[in-house]
Length: 443
Image 1: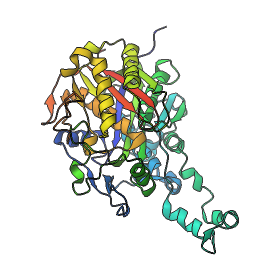
Image 2: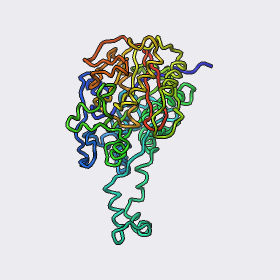
Image 3: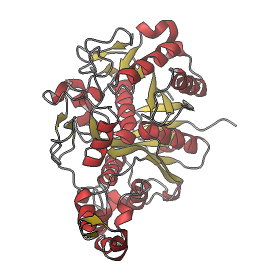
Image 4: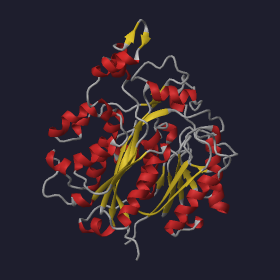
């Protein structure tokens, strides 16, 4: 039995550069950077004090009025996912419960809620330190933290629903409630590979007939004290604090680390006949997904590029596409010296003799790395490049490290006929690799 065809009909990026597909694409074409000195808190005691922050988003602008009270139990990561879902659904022209109740669209629903699913990647959601600190202070006795007082008094100073703000599955929970998505739902927590794995699962869910439409992708915020300290301790961050806009330098010869960020994105995947029946705009067709594990110790650098190369080959095999047909590679490219080197080696291994001809798309130079949502941002950029037959510039990547040996566009956007895109992601420290293949849509 042949699997059903799956197309991409909605894109919902939420990034420090821009919110929404059109503004995000224009920002990429202009080669803008959104990295700055962190403003949400004072990072002065940290080695790295820069990152990509999103200004001006309020969850009340993206949910029905009746649901606004739920914002009290939404951590930043959840808010980002809810905003991304709204952007994706709106971009796809779907009439879900949320958009109808907000009065943004008219008419009846054009998607069966029981056939609408959600697969969302999430990270380790960091606690709200001011809220937590107040409770901890009430559990101090004679200058020392007391477990006895914590149980008796400290925990009473936390809202009874406090934990619900920080469970990774709450991203998908709120999105499914707001849009009345009653189909298959899942949460994936595999670091930077989460979004690709979530999109891959949604692709298979629709292909095998379990759902007709899926919201999928990921979101995470690393622009908070706990996340920043973790990355600093792991020696992953650039310390170019005096030049934030040029600090993240994927595949560049002088790269020295990545930069924390926040954001992500959700996309709408849809069964082809369902999309055609409602005359939806189709960005591209998703035709393959692959995954692998480095099978190494958690937190350690993989010994070589074979894990990611395996995932890339699996996706191509699943898509029944050969390396000679790939027109663009969407790289993860975070700016870490050895990680970029290994990713470049995997891409070269898979492309073979064509490695010097196929352009590589890299967008983290202006965005930084926001963990579980980073793959969704990379994927959306790759889909937009295919749809618009243009490769945006990889800012801060010149001069390119000759050891990486990739063809990055660094001087400005380049027109390119793109029919097949291979998009890659890997988890820093987790060992997971995930890849996706999308093609230009032809009926």
